[in-house]
Image (cartoon, rainbow, N blue to C red; front, top):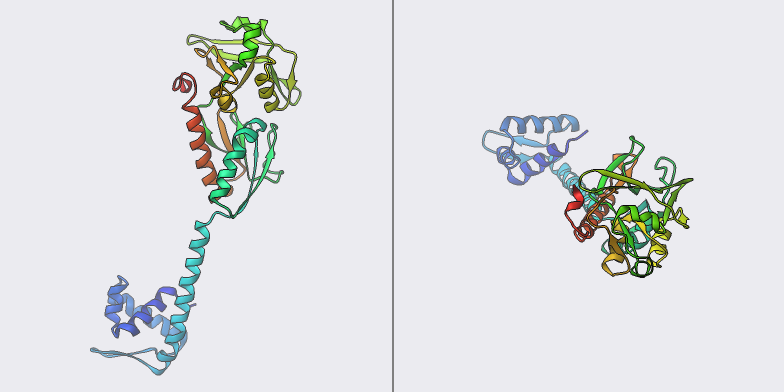
Length: 309
């Protein structure tokens, strides 16, 4: 099989009328150039260049072959440009799964922006709070809070410093009072989240000296994290939510962060995939955008940067 660099050497030598000049232009020694020309002539079974100590000229066979050599090099260059162009484009289908609350209220508008920047990209989005089976479900990546239980998954941080916050609507606090101490949560209606059959009613905090945990109760449970947020905004009780999920409500005044001096549970957001081969250019660009957006929201956390303790 003819080598690409051998063809280049032959064409350059023919154009320059000098094998040594062609060798210098390709940053190779005269001996290597001579061996390359000999190799291509042996593979073709024909002499392409007639050489003397002072001159070099094309043979009849060389003149006939030169046109095809130029065409071959031109086609190869065009193919390389096409591949490079394809690598610069963001296209194809991006299949991802995301938590219900984060997905509906943050990810949807961010994906709209992402697709406006990359109009050739198709997005398939699955929303839900159950852990996606990345080996069976038709998704490439999943966004999930917390550390992955499956150690075989590739986990890339999106918002590693994210934490939960206690929050409630101003209307609820006006009617029921604002808790000043953790123990007072027992007197309030706490909005609870369920994952499968498990109710997350055990809330943990750090008061700067020690870990404090308590069991809370309330009259509302949901397996949809967005429903818990909506209940809180409607004034139904106190929620213990990821800052990312309630940041917009807090900043707009629909919710208020309670006991901000406490350090609440970590809720790192990670991008999960089954294999690193799934980290395509669209996935990496999406990851960069999400990390940038989440970092901006994190910077607006009450008491930031204490959250990364």
